[in-house]
Amino acid sequence: MAWDFETEPEFQEKLDWADAFVRDEVEPLDLVFPGLAYHPLDDARRPIVDPLKQRVREQDLWAAHLGPELGGKGYGQLKLALLNEILGRSSWAPIVFGTQAPDTGNAEIIAHYGTDEQKRTYLQPLLDGEMFSCYSMTEPQGGSDPTMFETRAVQDGDEWVINGWKFFSSNARTASFLIVMAVTNPEVSPYKGMSMFIVPTDTPGVNIVRNIGLAGERSDEGMHALLHYEDCRVPAENLLGGEGQAFVIAQTRLGGGRIHHAMRTVAVCQKAIDLMCERALSRSTQGTKLADKQLVQAAIADSYAQLEQFRLLVLHTAWKIDRYRDYKRVRKDIAAVKVRTPQVQHDIVYRAMHIHGAIGVSNEMPFASMWFGVPIMAVVDGPTEVHQITVAREVLKGYKATDDLWPSEHLPKKQAAARARYAELLEHEVANL
Ligand SMILES: Cc1cc2nc3c(=O)[nH]c(=O)nc-3n(C[C@H](O)[C@H](O)[C@H](O)COP(=O)(O)OP(=O)(O)OC[C@H]3O[C@@H](n4cnc5c(N)ncnc54)[C@H](O)[C@@H]3O)c2cc1C
Image (cartoon, rainbow, N blue to C red; front, side, top):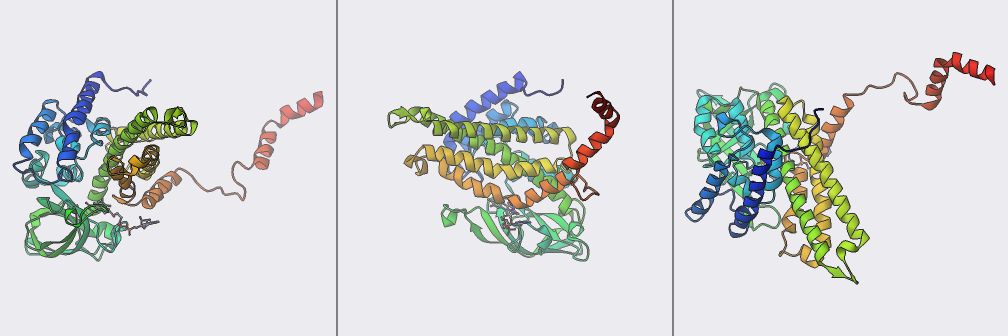
C-alpha cells in the first residue's frame, strides 16, 4: 500500500525543533525588527541573526529545498512544505532558514539555467544568505499578460542594452542583482522572443523611480520598485539561459514560488485557528464561553475542515513536484493551489478576527497583516482568474464533446441502451410473469 500520511520520525524531530525555535527565537525578530527582514544585515542585527542561521545549519535545515550540490540537504518540496507550515508564522523565519521568496525561485533558475560563472558570482552568495535578489518581470501596463511586455534588450557588440519600465519588482532596493525579462526578438511570438538577464543593481541605467509600499505601510517603507531601465548595459554573458527562453524559465520559477506561498499560507491559517480556539475557550458572554456557542463551533469546525483540505492539496502537489520533477506536469495542481490560497486565508482569518471582537480588528493583534495578505495572495504571481483558466483548461483536456445532441448520461438514451443490452433476459422475465 503506497499511500502514506506520516512524517518520518527523524524529520518530525527536526520539525519539532523548528517549531520551538521559530516561536521562541525567531518570532521575536518580527517585533524588534519589523519590516527589516529583506534588508542586508547591519551591525545591530548581524550579531543576533547570524547565530540563529548557524543553529539552523547545525540542524541541517538551511535551504532545505536545495540539493547538496547547492548547500541544502535535498529534502525536496514535500519536506519544505512541512517546514514552511512552521516558517510561515513569521516574516523573519524564511530569512533565518534560507528559504525566502523571491530568492528561492531566483536561486532555482540560476542553478538550473546559469553558467558556471553566473553560479559562482550570483548563486553562491545568494545561497549563503549574504545577498538578496529581485525578479523584475511585471510592467506597469500589464502583469497578468506577459505578451504585453515592452521592455527591450538589444544586442550591441558583446553587450545587451536594456530599455523599459518594470513595476512591483520586490526588494529591488535591497537586492544586489535583478533578473530582468525583456523582449529580444519582437518579430517572433512573445513566447519565443523574450529573454532573461542578470543585471547587477548598481549597473548605470538601473533607475529606481519609486519604492512603492503596500497599503498600510509608510510611503518611505515600500519594497516594490517602479524601475526605469535606461540604456542599461550588461555583458553578453549576463544572458540567463538561451536567447528566447524567458517563458520557459519563468514557468520554472513561478511554479515553485506559487506553491511556496501556499505552504506558508497553511502556517498563517493555522496560527489564526490557534488564536481563534484560544479566544473561544477564554472569553465568556451571555452566560457561556464562546466555545460553547454553536455558531462559534461552526466557525471553528469549518476552519479546521477547510485548512485540512487545503493542506492536503498543498502537500499532494508538493509530493507530485518531487515525484515528477516537471513543473509542466503539475501545472493544474499548482494553479488549483494558487486559486484556493487567498480563499482559505480569507475565510479563516476573517473568522478568527471576528471571534476576537474589537481587539481582533485592533493593531494590538496580528490579524491585520494576515488579512491584508488575502488580496496580495490573490494577485501576486498572477491573479486568481488566470489560474482558474489554467485549471479549467487542464481539466478539460481530459474530456471530449459528445457527437450526439443528448449528453452521454441522458437517461432515456441510457435506459434504451440498458434495455437493449439485457433484452433477452428482460423478455424471459416478462414471459414468466
Ligand atoms: C506584493 C506583491 C509583490 C510582487 N512582486 C513582484 C515581483 O517581485 N516581480 C514582478 O515581476 N512582479 C511582482 N508582482 C506583480 C504581480 O506579479 C502582478 O501584480 C500580477 O501578475 C498581476 O498583474 P497586474 O497587477 O498588472 O494586474 P492586471 O494584469 O492588471 O490584472 C488586474 C485584474 O484583472 C483581472 N484579470 C486579469 N487577467 C484576467 C483574465 N485573463 N480573466 C479574467 N480576469 C482577469 C483580475 O481580476 C486581476 O486581478 C508583485 C505583486 C504584489 C501584489
